[in-house]
Image (cartoon, rainbow, N blue to C red; front, side):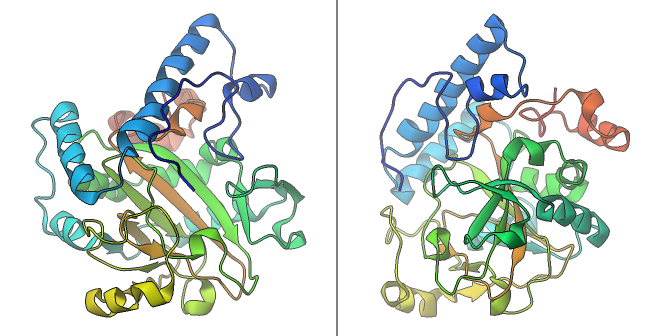
Length: 334
């Protein structure tokens, strides 16, 4: 669990999360080219991003304080931005959720799923030291996370991130400084019990202004497919904001009052959530994959670990879209 207020200086061998290679390991693996200027840039950005999250953001989890700091951040970074003015953005700010049917081509989703379900090295951010090499069906671990840098360089992933409708909605909610700042792709395995984020919680170590974008990589038709469950209108609730997991019994009156529900989706559907609202995954009865993007104004503590791509490394047909949205891709492509 996140410990609040743990400001500190971090070095080149520090990792923000289990399974993410630190700068020194990226250099050793040939992911990054090591230069004196590169080291200085990484150190400056990483210390800023890390302490933005683990001192400013997590000094207190009080929703009132976070809303106030969020307004200040927007005034500093985009003082003239008018956010939440479209009906769908206003609804998102009200209920913490937006659903978009068929935003993506199902064949594109299939390509992303094929990349994730291929034999490779998987990790688990909840279990430092865990590693599975091979096909996902050969593991009995509840969660298998795709390597981040492999994900960020995947052509299908880059095409999903470049979707104009996806970018447009994020900007409606967050303003013109909205940017991709991290992503996760994971496989949930049937285990018969709730594992980690399959218990009620709030995401407590994300930027002040952020959205989580979810792309199911297979249809989620029933509870057996492990859908997200969310209690709407709870991101501003000044109850149940301590950093821990909550039980169904604790939240049952709130669920009844606010109308908690599960999110079912077909291939190609995308949904957007403020995951500071109370939510959980649900344990699946069959294996399924999920892609989730973090879009924010300020960086995540993980953001400096992204090795930026040169525009020429991006598939040619995506370059015009990315070039027109440089600000959105400022942490991923230069």
